[in-house]
Structure formats: structure tokens, C-alpha cells
Length: 101
Image (cartoon, rainbow, N blue to C red; front, side, top):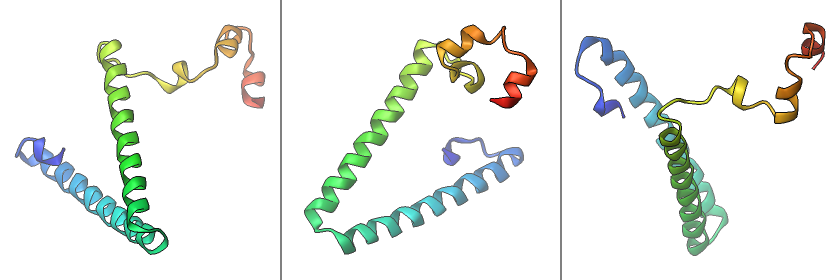
């Protein structure tokens, strides 16, 4: 993602930050992979890694699918995260009720 940014001065710090995060995540993944190798046999490690990769790809596809369905509008957690029964009561609740919740 950092490599896709333009090479201007405004993007330089963002690129550095993204690359730093990517390096940290690579280190974390290597540590977790090593821990799996210490505890499990090679076939099981491969199975676990394949399962998590599949889950990651499925989650990314679901996210992109939702964005396409909503014409690029990302949901807001405040509106979309409220259960339907609470959304109906939203206008009936006082500030005191909201603070207590």
C-alpha cells in the first residue's frame, strides 16, 4: 500500500509509517509462526496457516463486497452498530438513559 502512494513530500511520512507498521507485523507473524512450529507438527502448522489465510481473504472479499453494494460509502459504527430494537427506541431515550447505558 505504501508503494502505491505518490512520491511527493506530503506522502513521504505516510509511506514511512506504513512501511514501519508492515515491518512490525512481519516480525509478529514470524514470531507466531515460530511458536506454532515449536508446538505443532509441520502438517498441522500448514493447515492452521492455510485456514487463517483463507479467513483473511474471505474477510477482505466481504469488506470489498459491502463497499461495492453501498456504492463506496463506509458504514458508521454509530448508526450501523445499533441493534434494530434500540434504533426504534432512539428517539424515545433521554440523555440520562443514554449515559446510564
